[in-house]
Image (cartoon, rainbow over all chains, first blue to last red; front, side, top):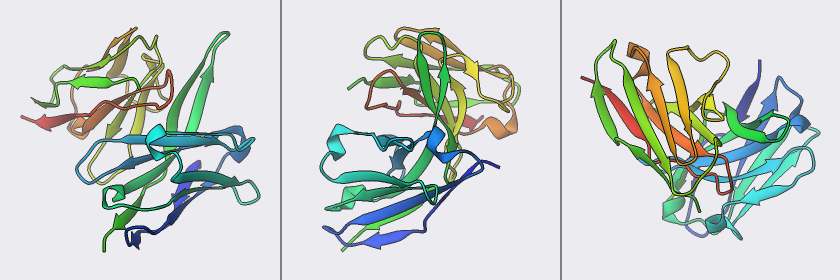
Length: 125
Length: 107
């Protein structure tokens, strides 16, 4: 079945970096993008960006520009999200999700149709 | 950035009730609107995409409507497993922002 398996929980100190992995299975990895979404404790969902697994093109949320890098390894069907210069407000559950699409004659509709279980990242001194 | 505002923020209802959640965009997003359900400690689940298209496997009691700036998610007859938090998300232009969520609780 289609699934995304994320790496385990991380505890980091302020100023450090974290790299979360997301391994896809059950579908052709390069036919879809991977989006990243995070959720701070007790808060709502925040879209971080996405990467095309086909050509590596990325689109990041402006507020994370310069601190986040999303990559893929097509040989292992794995996506990665690295966040640098961590702060306490980066403490959150980080989700990867498959970027599904529906094409019409004129438009493409994008959505997140398969999600990983999430990776808890705690930033604390 | 496009701001998404959901109402109400929380809602109490009973099994069997018909429930409607509203999502408003700060500018027109055509029908580039998705709805997700999230239960505590779990990843979100896609319910509706393109404002009104039901995701495969999602029960038909869920429906979505709207276009432009105003959208609704309707649950026609609440079931015990529907008590959760619901989020709208625009996919019109990045950043693909979410609403703040609507927590649906048992009355």
